[in-house]
Image (spheres, rainbow, N blue to C red):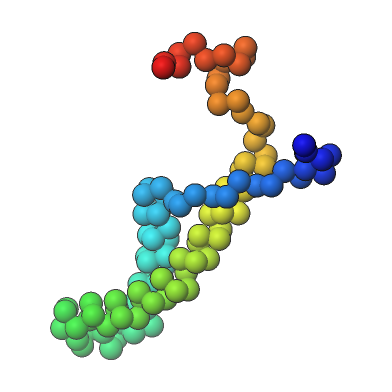
Length: 107
C-alpha cells in the first residue's frame, strides 16, 4: 500500500550505466580540456621531448586527473541531469496510444 507521501515524493529510479555514446561524450569532455591545459602549462618543456616521451608524460598526468578527478564528477552530473529530466516528464505507460493498449506490440 502506498502512502500519500510516497505518491507525492516517489523514489527516483536509479540511473543505469551510461550508454556507449554518453560515455564517449563524457570521456571527450574530460580528456580534451585536460590535455589542453597540460599542453598549455607544460608546452615549452614538452616541446623538447621526443613524441613518444611527450605522449607518455601527457598520459601519465592526464589519465589520473580524468579517471579519479573528472569522470566521477561527470557521472554525478549525468545522474542529476537524468533525475531532473525524469522528474519533469509526465508518467508514461510505455505505449504511445491514447487508449493505453498497444496494437503494434507483437507477442
